[in-house]
Image 1: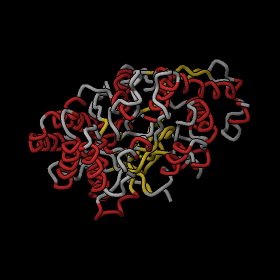
Image 2 (image 1 turned 180 degrees about the vertical axis):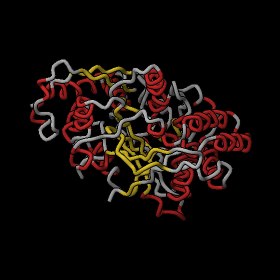
Image 3 (image 1 turned 90 degrees about the vertical axis):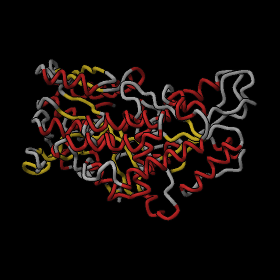
Image 4 (image 1 turned 90 degrees about the horizontal axis):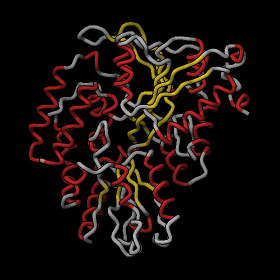
Amino acid sequence: MATALLAGVALSGCAAEPAAELTVLGSWTDEEEAEFTRVLHDFEAASGIRTRYQGHRDVSQVLQVGIERGRPPDVAILPRLNDLQRYVNAGQLAPLKGAFTTDPAAAPQLIKLARKVGPDGNPVGGELAYAVTIATHLKSVVWYDPAELAKFGEHPPRTWEEMVSQTQRIADGQQVPWCLGMSAPPVSGWPGTDWIEDILLHDSGLVAYERWTHGDLPWTAPEIRAAWETWGALLRVSAGETARASLYTKFQVAGKGLFPREEPAASSAKRGCHLDHQGSFVIRDYRRHLAKLASSTRAASPAPSFTFFPTPPPATKTDNSSLQEVSDDVAAMFRDTEPARKLMSYLASGQAQVARRAQTQDVAFSRRTTAADYQDPVTKAVAARLHTGTLCWDGSDLLPAAMATAFERAVLVYLEAPERLDVLLTELEAVRGKLSKTEWMDLQCVPTA
């Protein structure tokens, strides 16, 4: 069956190279690591090429150490796109080769970049394919339990103003509107940067967003300031110590607040929160938590559920409702060998996506998957959104590493002391001013049709 799945991926004849072995580095650990290694086993069975996966949460640091020592992995899976630009500029990343790089079906998964040199950041030569997107996460979404929200007479808001009013009504009912957790070692703060990016995209639009991710829009610009202030205003409505408490709360733990607690009085207890702004990868955590609730005789009845609504734009800018923020996990080749090229070809294939969906119980998405590939209504809706409107990459993933780190830290300070916004934006602008133009990416938002 594995051989049939890999048909058309140019793997025939590879069984003659049983000694070949590939090292694959990625950020997936524990359950996600087990799922991905089973996908690699399908590749191994058809190709005869052994793979050795190494999972580490701080993959960027581990990869950099390997490169400096002259021992990079054959293939690395990167959660931050800007790392690609750095390695391309340094000549440390091999461009992709093979028929799959010109396959129209694989085109949405290919990341093309030009090497940049000099202080002006001008590219040298044309763009080449350097990476394959193997996982895409939808981020412009807010999760909720329909039955719980209905108790407040609420429905999914269509505008930002409606969402603010909804937040106020939940707070007026002595409930906590928003699930908020900023702790996510080793890069805490990114759940907050997701918020600001999403607001900037839907409030100021595609042009301002791209200027910002390209390093051309100052942090002190009115559009950027407005995004921070809009988020801060929503959290103040949300009330109390939610923002400060989020500094010490993991985002997975915060998201559990959507559902009843596993306590005898769970059916009558207040929910921890009612709305969760989080990427589609959180489906895995929700499912795990609901399964645990279902196995407990103390769980509330009827069974809780979850779905989402898209991040709404301001009422005066409804055209921006088609803009969506996404993040990608991408595979890149650091050793240009025939086995490595064959693995990259496989990862770009539809067969690999079939394998990933099977191993993850349909919580894996990519630019290649469609709504028809899913049975569950929620995952089907996520896949449909990935083929709707215009997709813009997560801004933090596009920023140079120093800029992204400063952004994440500023979010944490802002939640503790929002009155320091002017100082924070000035400090962020100072970081931007020290960066070379070569360090910024030129990737643009991508229409899905």
